[in-house]
Length: 450
Image (cartoon, one colour):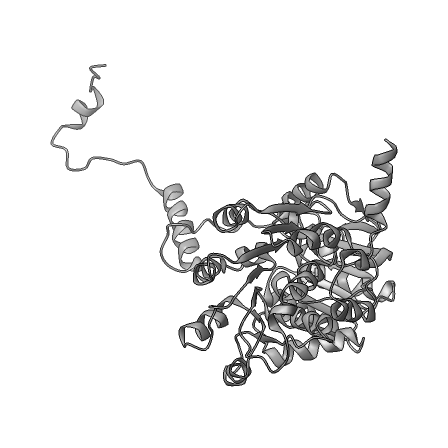
């Protein structure tokens, strides 16, 4: 028992110096304020330094990027050598969105500050010429989105002959965005003797199958299981009709004098509509999603980070690139239909030991989603019933719309035809057989055989 206690104490008091990193890398991470590794870093870094394949499962904000970037830089530092040496791609990082690619690139730059390791970030939606020029000048670490990587590879601008590590980041989001087949193509282009690292916030069956297929004797590490929401985050739910959600959002922000609020919507249209409504009513708000240009997305993100924008409304895909340490509020304007996404969303608040608040709006059609979420997190969200926009009562006398399925013509024409048909039936006289050759007396005395 005493030995176990000593071992546990050693785990919890581990510092980056205990990992025996190269002095140049150790100095850089100390400058950015890293002293003690997070749980995912404690578990992952020794495995990566040993050259083994790894699958890492952790919520957002737990230090996943540093968990793979620091040991990889330590591994390739000696291989890269001096700045005069010819550069080849040693490490490839595949990530689903532009924002994530940029964020990972910034982290690699910070950690490799005192080395000659050079990284390049490439993504779609912008002119490829500047990116190709950077590749021609030489690169050690390439961070790319799947589509742009395959485009430039087919054009002959990328060679993986000297690659050592393949890192697949946010694998579950890659699956959600339909990139999984592109990821498979990329994996098949890489050397078979590579070291493969796969990181994800959740672990769907398809991602596990991918790891089983392409990773060799991979080690699995997991912290903060996906079913767990942070204890420092208060969780509330408001029952509100879909049409009143924008009004309730405005009411809550104004009433509680909120700023630095991240709002999640299910659709791009919903994000734009909510942002326009808030802006129209005097709140500094903007939206970010996949249809926005790269320059526009960067401008909005910078505005949110420097607090010139109080409310950022985002879809789940675009939000993966948002990395803000002290985010006080997360609002689920629309509940996600995947329970794990809820945990991923609210994981953006309450970081670094700070308190956070997660507020959710639930319309009538979203109640099944709420039940699935509460089942996953094993907790009932606190219901806030005292607000100006509760569910509206259903009017029993309200005219029911006609069922038009399988019928041709406009709604008015169909309704008119049905109305005329009913009137005709009511006014129709009993049918008589005027063409019968039988006499009236014969008809009157007609006998039934049954």
